[in-house]
Image (cartoon, rainbow, N blue to C red; front, side, top):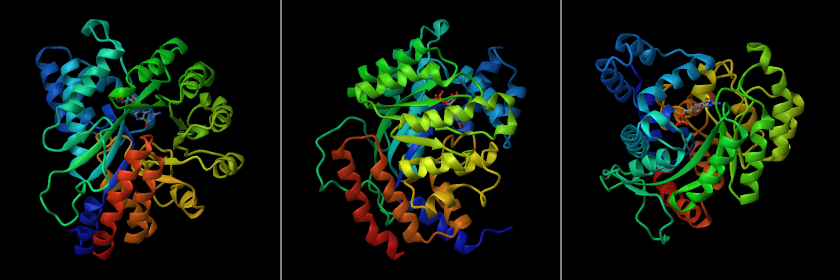
Length: 379
Ligand code: 5GP
């Protein structure tokens, strides 16, 4: 079926809209073309069988457990210093190209003895990638921002150089021990002056116990490092091991992180608690539908939270893995829930208030949206 003119116009508008991305995993945001190239290299070396891997990378429909098997494969392809630098550079370039003006990218620092990699050297490789982006200006550290800076996103189609603020969150993988999780929080503290501003808890939700990560999350809290937690991603009936997660969801809400990811499968009590907490939620439509956290786009809990005026931000989660983009996620919000351009703009603008970066960055982002408002909303 041909794309209608109206759809085309709306899609272009969503690309031009300045956007804030708060939930993007580095290794989930790698381009398929890069993964295939890396797989080919490893195939040629006899480390993997390229044809098998190619089919897995190109497959579109994935359950959540399949995604985690795929991440293990991605990590084989991407976990050496030069490749980490390359993917960090490409991912930032891809987000900037679609007018993301502020990006929090999260990644799990990895030890890999065979590659001489420590969590610190992994993160140094990420930072090197961010610094080597050439086509756009990456603002990684707090520079002395001025309110009269040139707009970071040009909605008139002008070819002015784009500018993107990038900050890093360090992820604790649910497979990790308490001690490894504490190492990650201490590393975040050490790398505060290099753009690291928060901690994320992610990884396979059927693995691990809340009590294992709690000391590290408490430590982050004590150090004043903001946290965001993947919460209630899977339906209970998908796995028997989900039963303790009811307790976990309560504990996560009680912990009061600065933000929560997904919140797909809450019961009535938990919804009530979430809504009264006003903890901002990172909404990942495509990811939730593809992995079964939400039954369909139409029945996604976005509508409920949006109508309740709960603080929200639209995010991609894993743009490479799920073949999406932040512009596409905004388009889906409009086409599924009937939001107007003004409402979409306000949604994008609202996310500025939930960034982990400091007030100077927030001020600068607010100015970007104010400048963009007249032009965007007139079209
Ligand atoms: P990385 O941290 O290696 O840069 O990005 C991939 C990792 O992010 C995965 O191995 C997994 O731990 C985490 N991740 C990515 N997407 C999801 C998701 O949808 N849910 C959860 N719980 N974790 C995820």
